[in-house]
Image (cartoon, helix red, strand yellow):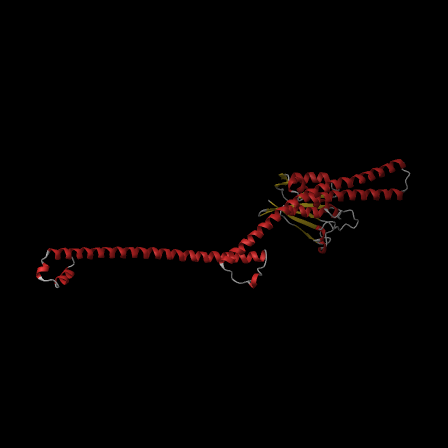
Length: 351
């Protein structure tokens, strides 16, 4: 038992009671109680220290979570403002532009998520309808092309029969008129073919890619076009092998080379095919020494049915086809030209 406590208790006991066995038992009981109290107090202090640490850690964790929630709410608020600008304006209860509570923010995000989901479903339906319409339009273009060309062939055949039956007895004006009819039939036939080609350029199902040696392709085009003897077609450097749809690439080069030949008004004409490799793209140029094109027409010539041909031999669709094919391959086309100084058509194709 604690010495100070024992002495204080014995001061109040007479000699007989001090030596009594009951007093000794009493003092021992107090000693046990004192020790039990100290043990319990120690346990309580330890428990309180542990609880305080746990509470401190929990408090720190709650503070961190609160900071994270603030950041999340701030991000959601910014996202909501962006969504508002895209989907709809918040006009409820005059709260446009005011800060929203967590519940209001959650409700608004849920509402906008539902709207976005509905818009996405409508977009999918629209894309399916558009795909169906494009297929029907392509099929229709083929049918119309065939139906329009059929009477043209019949007219051409009738003109030839008239000439044969006349046995050379037709007068010059009549023959001239028949030739004009024949020329217009040919132009109409080319126009119908051009419209059909223009309508199917963006059809990816017809994009049959393969390795194309452009050197061989230019040789084939030269033989097909059969340029006049006073015009030469050449390349500055060896052209690359590219991976693309051969029919589309052939249309680009054939149209531009044909245009270059028709533009040449010199006794000695030159068509030069240039090539340069740039990051992510092939860059090509078709240069001629022809009559050139005024700057005011540099954009007009790429529009469909626009032509600078005074004699109206051109259908005005060739360059629009070229432009559409180039854009199909994520490239661009432009022109550098001045009157009487020749013309260069540049275009790029994505590798």
